[in-house]
Image 1 (cartoon, each protein chain N blue to C red):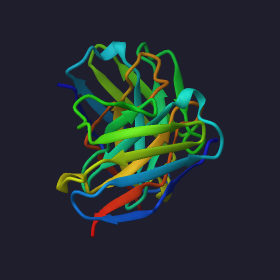
Image 2: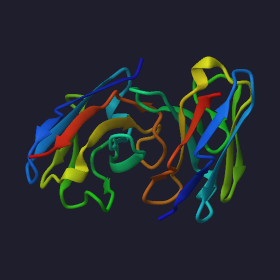
Image 3: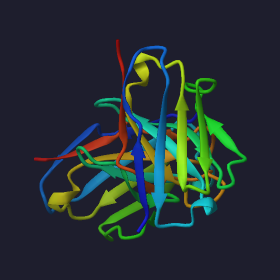
Amino acid sequence: EIVLTQSPGTLSLSPGERATLSCRASQSVSSNFLAWYQQKPGQAPRLLIYGASSRATGVPDRFSGSGSGTDFTLTISRLEPEDFAVYYCQQYGSSPRTFGPGTKVEIK
Amino acid sequence: EVQLLESGGGLVQPGGSLRLSCAASGFSFSFYGLHWVRQAPGKGLEWLSSIGGSGGRTYYADSVRGRFTISRDNSKNTLYLQMNSLRAEDTAIYYCAKDPTKVADYYFDYWGQGTLVTVSS
């Protein structure tokens, strides 16, 4: 089973700042099959990125994904008030699908 | 618009059973794989089970294999999760989610709002 580690656990930033979230896999993620989700309190997760770098439908272009192999990054270029949430990475390159523990982006 | 609406959650005693349903609309139901994912209170996400569009292929996490059964009724556009031998650690919000393909091998592009299952005496 691929274990995903996300860092930092919490990121304290101000609106307008750049957020860089890391997701590291215990082994190489096949075909860079890595997704990122955003979850706000009391809501279901929302798909942001799939295939490591492809934005899902309707996702603003301030969200971008990069990386390959074992190291992946989600970048939010300029934080908007609605971007403060928990972000999860998930690999679907091998079974079982696994999620990282999440990074909370909070208002500083 | 894709919509997924879970139901069937509630309070159940340890060792008991519950069947969750997920009613889908806004897409060609039988053309897509579906999944169940859960989230324990204050915790992260855990994939549980997947089923292909035709219902012929199913997959389970080790934590629920042998206790939970995923199924679908393509005539009713509904996904199910039969949960038996429930334990306290099964307490969670249960989400159904859609796969972008028929084979249920990928990521989760749409999610329902979830249904809460509480296992307690």
